[in-house]
Image (cartoon, rainbow over all chains, first blue to last red; front, side, top):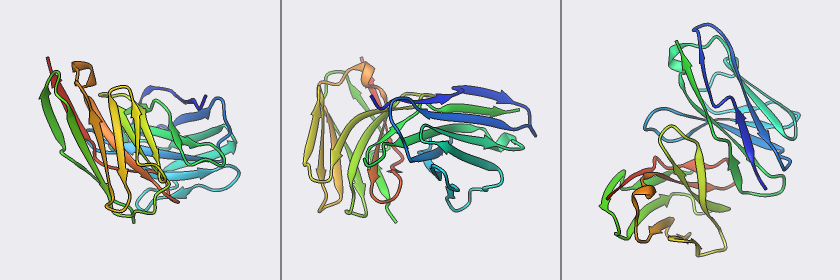
Length: 115
Length: 110
């Protein structure tokens, strides 16, 4: 159990367009999901914490109007990169925490390339 | 604010060697500490999770220890193999989301 599925695994988009990334917990409920970004040869940096049914909490320096997060159900959170630019190219990884537990489970990541 | 540091940043060893990766954290009020493996361009694979009440966890050739009082964890890999080559990340969990170290990039040479 405890599988997190992230889709798509990679995407290439044109500058100025928007891209949506989905994160699903397949076999458990997750009231809290996390979105991380990883630049080449860097560690994972938390972007935002997503809570089911409420607004996401963004880390300092992360533009909430650019990175739209929706956590509409206990098994799905989405990250939309709006008006993407080449500097948004990165590896985005989601994580889900089982309700009532402290262990986090990770999706396989999404490689975003903006051209 | 929790900070996680991993030493060394990179390590290259011949096949068969035993090795230790180090992780330190500044806030000892953690729920657990996790070790992950990340292959180039891939997501994270969870290796071991040590709860705050535990001292160590073992899985196959891997052994992770936790010393909350000193803010340290180690990942011991026995009889290393070329397939162990990857980046190893440790992450501390408290009442905030996981905080990651920058990782140790391991190369095991055949």
